[in-house]
Each structure stands twice: as structure tokens, then as C-alpha cells.
Image (spheres, rainbow, N blue to C red):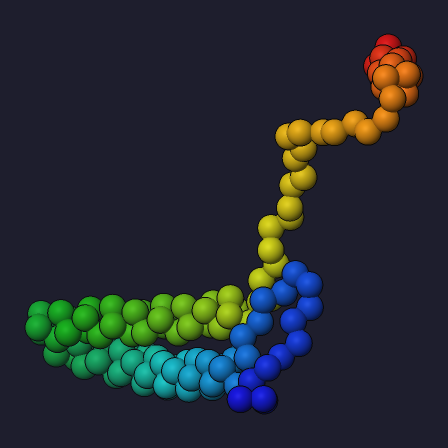
Length: 125
């Protein structure tokens, strides 16, 4: 448990290092597998395209179209994994806090208040 505690600086939200490492490992593993599947799909598309050009069969062309779509989907998934990894590793910054004053309290005498109001009036003119 003591190893899971990380120092949090102002404005940063961080996951414990162990969790972040596991996420990175999982994302890398998934991306590697998707990349292998995409490479295999591209090779299969090339081979099936040769078969289609030789046979000219409509069914072969339908299967080629499905294989191309599935390969493109795997590549899209691989890109989403990369984007997810970037989002997870990006430090989260809290939105800037806006200061708004709803009620102000003046502490002082009426003479000081009058002088203060006079100064404000002169600045605005």
C-alpha cells in the first residue's frame, strides 16, 4: 500500500504509479495484438485480391470486401487505443477558478467611506 501513494502537486490529478503501469502495459499489449492482426489482414487482403482477379467469382469479391472492412476496423481500433493512451497519460489540469464577490464589507468610519467613494468616483471620470 505504501508504494501506491504518490505526491500530488497543486493542479494535478494522478493515478497511483502501479495502476498507471498496469494500464500502460494493457494498452501496449492490446495495441501490439491489434497491430499484428492488422498486418495479417493486409497480407490476407493482398492474397485474396489475387485469387479474385484469377477466379473472377462474385463470392470471392464479397469476401474480399468483408475482409477489407474488418481490416480497416482493426486499424481504427488500434488508433483508438493510441488515443486512449495519450488521454490517460496526459496530466489533468483543473479549470481556472473564477473569483466573484457577492457581498463586500467595509470596515471603517463614515469619513473613510466617503473618501473611498470619492476616490472611486474620480477614477471613473
